[in-house]
Length: 237
Image (cartoon, rainbow, N blue to C red; front, top):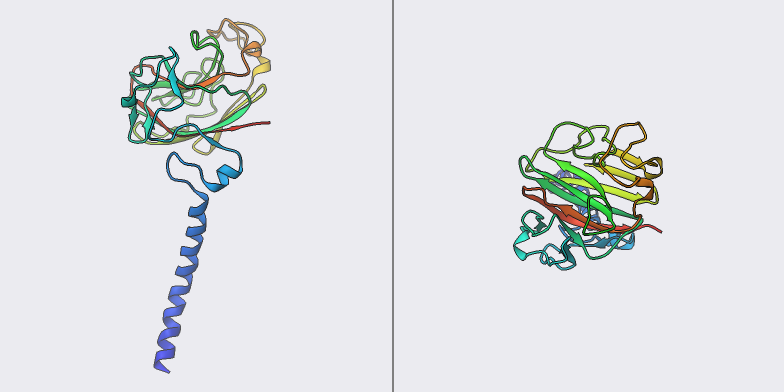
């Protein structure tokens, strides 16, 4: 009887622990290591653009290969790569992008989307601003640069990893930072060169309604270190 009471007592302690461990194992099966796709992501149509080990598939906007020394601890660093951007060779039109990024102190960088001409990336692409600032204006993290301000700055401090997800679907651009949707843009509302729908000026010579709806995606070198990993794309039908 003492043995049975002791076994019953141990069982009451172990059973919840076993259930918890089982749940964690199931959850882990849905997740992927850095720079890899989970089985669920594969089934959902996601494509990995960076394997964390090579710079295969990536070039500078000048057409040269991304130097191997820009591969740092499983992340791509565009700083001192030899171009204003490092971009993926493929072009994308309607797609979702997910990646993680980290900025050094004082860094000014960005993610460029649908860049039509690699010789004129600023005037033929869309830039998601990434900056080591605390504001939420049109040049702060989460902004569509010079066009749309985020509702708030949801970025973590310099030196910490952030997760960004964005969607380019025809004329609709949506940005989520660290799990919070911070920016939305309807390209079709930008009908005049150099002018935003609210009447404020921007630096672009082409109305964004007429900007390319397909192009390269890439990461900006603006003078300081920044890092990108877990770069994944899902093309939208």
